[in-house]
Structure formats: C-alpha cells, structure tokens
Length: 358
Image 1 (tube, rainbow, N blue to C red):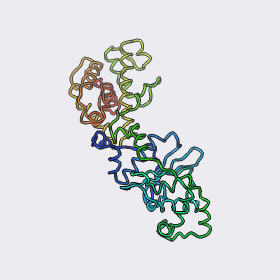
Image 2 (image 1 turned 60 degrees about the horizontal axis):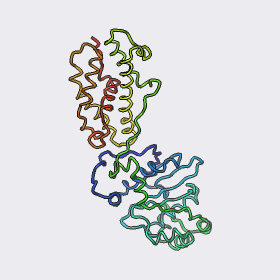
Image 3 (image 1 turned 135 degrees about the horizontal axis):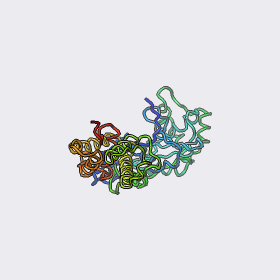
Image 4 (image 1 turned 90 degrees about the horizontal axis):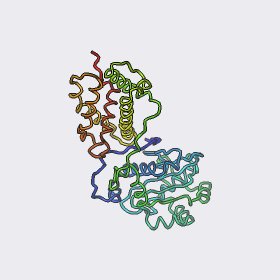
C-alpha cells in the first residue's frame, strides 16, 4: 500500500549509538537492508539538504511511481531521489525500469518532471550506467532499445506500456540531463557531520543541540514549577511572594530562581532533542524516573521549610546515578544542570511539591 508521509524530522534509534564502532561506515551501509538504506538516505537529506527544500516527503510501498523521496522547492518544483541497495554497482539493466517509470508517469502527468533526479546507490553506479548518464543521447537510445525487455510489461501490473508514437516522441524529447548520481562516499561524509551520523556510525564527537536560553517572559508551561518555587521562598521567608517581580527584593532568592530556570531549560533542551530526533522517546521518561527514585527519600524527610527541602532535593539530584537512561550511558548528555532541571519537570508532573500542604 502506498504511503505518503511528510518528514518534519526523521527519527533514529539511540541503540545504534556506539555499536559496531570497529565497522567502517561504508561497510555498515553495505550490510543495511533496503528499508534501512532508505531511512539512512532520508536522514542524510534532512541533516544535509533541508535548507534546500521547503519540505521533504517520503513515498513508501508499491506504487511509488519511481520516487522514494521528493524534495519540494518553495516555488513548487521538485527533485526526486531514488534509493537502490545492491551488492554491486548499478548496471543499466538494474535501472531501465526506473527510467521507464520516470518517463511514463511524467508523460501521463501523474507526477511532475523534476528539476533533478538523483540516484543514491549503496555500491554506486557501475561504469556502464555512468557512461550512459554522462551521455544522455546514449541513455535515450539504450532505454528505447531495451524497453520491451525491461519496461513494457513491468511499469504497471494492470497493463502493458508499449512505445506507441506519442509516447515514443515524448521519450525522445525528454531531458535526460536531469539524471544525476551522488557518490555514496560523499553521502556518508556529509552524513557523518549530522546528529544522525553521530548516532548511527559514531567516530565523530556527538553534536548536541545548543542549550535553550530562558525567555525574558516566563512561558505558560513553566508556571507550575515557578509557582512552586515562589511558594518555597515564601515558606522560608515567612512572607507571601506570589510574583517574580516581588522576589526581586530578595536578591539571593531571585538569583536562585534564575538558576532554576536555566536548569529547567537545560533539561528541556534534552527533552526536545529526544522528541525530535530519537525513535525511543521513553529514554527521557527513564531519566525522570531515575531522578525521582534518587531523590524521593530525601524529599520525604522533615524540613524547617519547603525551601530547605528544595535545596536538599537538588543536591541529591545532582549526584543521582542516571546511567539507566541511555541519554546518560550512551550519549553522555546528562549533567548536573539537566538532573536538577528534571526536578522542576517532576513538579510540573505533580510528582513533587516543596511545601507540604499540611
């Protein structure tokens, strides 16, 4: 069944990080299955070419009409990417059918003619096919000569596609200079500089997203933990403080709150990274659970004020072992700031409260 899915951002399995580091990236590409190779190509496009397109869409399953991925320009024109995972370089006989689909479905106006059509092959294009691509007139002649053998009965399952005069004239006028090849070594080299390349292949330092900076105005999703902090300061000072503005009169506590916001945004940076990049979004939940389990005994002790409970909880969070989460054990992206920031997320989740209601 045909599926047509816009890829706002491809996701990658965190389990891939740090595995088989002794295997060269090109060898990992060679042992991929077809689906993994297509996913790898999508990750490369998003990581390296997203600025080129207004959107990128993947077509999967039967009926793709010779397109694995479509890159859309802002003016509505398109590029096509066709992925081929073979054990050897692509020969002309491996590709006549794909060229036939391109000609047939553009002739029928079921798909637009692309600006460029890229062949992404796991073992590159063989010399014979490359020679034809380099000489579009020879490619045309060879396609017509081999049409009956490789295309006529294989483009669709419902009917034959003979080269009648109208269609033949169309093929003869088709601009085969749009056919391009992209060397797999170049794809890999570009891919290695992306977050996907760091995780899938390793070998280069993992580049994490830039830590978010607290906004000047408190965001609505921050209000639960901000309110809890103000409540803790009020409990310590024995003065009602219900706004950040009123807290400014107490310099040390105001600075403390600003540090808590920075910690919250550090944790939020990782949460968004997991949401947007990894297939296993539960790894952040594992982190939250580890922080909760690590501080709850400290949290439930008796304190003179909610502020003192907050301080002790944050101390305990900073030294809590979070290696159960692969964000720490594999990606090594969890530090003290992220651990303390998670405490405020637990407040947002109604799992912690600094001031007892009693």
